[in-house]
Image (cartoon, rainbow over all chains, first blue to last red; front, side, top):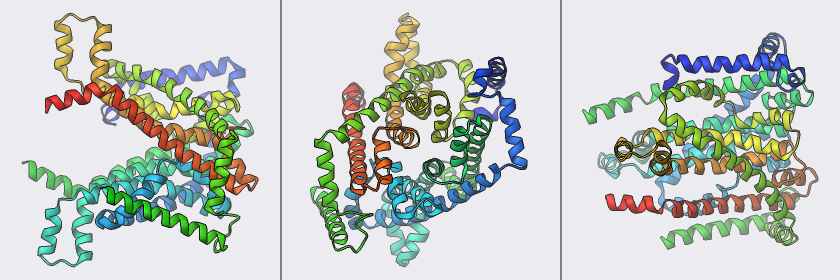
Amino acid sequence: MNALKRFNGSGWLSFGLLLLLWEFGSRAAPKLQLYLPPPSQVLAALGRSAVSGPMVAHLSVTVGRFLDGYFLSAMIGVTLGIVLGYFRFLHNLFETLIEFLRPMPSVAIIPVAILMLGIGDSMIVAVTVYATVWPILINTIDGVRHIDDVLIQTGRTFRLPQWKILWRVILPAASPYIVTGLRIGLSIALILVTTAEMVAGSKGLGFFILDEERSMNSGNMYAGIFLVAVLGYTLNRLFLLVEAKAMKWRHGMMARQTA
Amino acid sequence: MRRRKFHGFLFLAGLMVIWEIVSQIELINPLIVPPLSKILKNFTEMVLSGQIPRQILLSMKRAAAGYFLAAAVFIPLGILMGLSQRFYRMLIVTIEMLRPVPPPVVIPVAMLFFGLEDEMKIFVIFFACAWPILLNTFDGVRNLDWVLLNTAKTFGLSRARTIWQIILPAASPQIMTGLRVSLPIMLILVVISEMVGSTDGIGYFILDSQRRFKVAQMYAGMLSLALLGYLLNQLFNLLHRRLLSWHWGMMRRVE
């Protein structure tokens, strides 16, 4: 990531050469063009549908599902994680269940979700939540369990009520772990939304990309993939930005400790 | 420790009993959530008849091909990137451009090139496993203890031998991390690619069972996937301990 900050001449040059090779290779071989249209055509397709095509509508559907799924996962994962991390008894109860469910690839839940919820938005959001909750939950549990006991004891000494200990002591102390879980969850949520859209549904970028492939509109297909990649990149950047703001207090504290 | 596990198992068993009862007395629709006993019966039948093992074997062949291909290409590439700054700078822009692409959206591209053949799934798995393997290998080589390399130089080791005997072993814990992270990714991607474009394999089997409304069969397929995920993980841990036993031994001595 830091590599992109400092201008990397040879890196951009080789990337540009690759694009040129793609452009001219594809133009030279008309047969190849069906599968791999030159990047200029992909760009044109992107421009066309950005103005009038259905791509923007599909993008907004995907973003909406992603946001619903992601924030629901964050709420469930963090809440459940704090409860399971804090109350040892509950953790003992659920540990085996979690170990049992976790090795199953999360996408296998899609058929069940279709069965229960049909092929609408709620199915896609449910599948996304199921997959995205795991990293958030596990990291939050880890974070709560790694809290220095002195912190909690100090809170008790000051006679803070239980909810205040949770809110003012445990949540901030576990937040570095929680943030890690939330970051991993970000890419998982995007993967699950697009996957579910490909398997079932008639809207969203995942559906759009697969549909364009089936009708051999490879230019539109690549444009859709480009859009998903930009979406993923933007979400990641946005997350890092929010994280830097939200966790500023911590970096300050860490700096003071080491000083 | 054992007591803790015991509570967990008891809880799990309790949940399973509740599932059975709730479905039996039709508190939830047994057409959607059939009783557990029916699923287990279905599962054993299909394992014994060879139906599930055959699907899993098909899937695992594709998965293994993509996974090992990714390892064979991206471990050497990661080593080269770790050793040569120039090489790293040349590739990193392209890598950072490709990395945000969520692997499932590569499936349509692969279908365009390979149709519904095995190569399609292999390519998708190859693409998805590339990043964790490449970046972990790179990290491992980059963070190598330079004393090791200087020692190799002092003893006049050839470049090939330095890579084979010094760099590869020293970076192997990190390389293993990359391979471990890729393992569930491999499983997820083989299932997805079989759901989207295939006529066999365990991913197709599960989705197809749902479409034909053979619900118990669908759950049995999911159960076999969970078991498969668990077994793969255990197998990896076993190999990991075997292959890196020298490493752990060394670490202990250092302490």
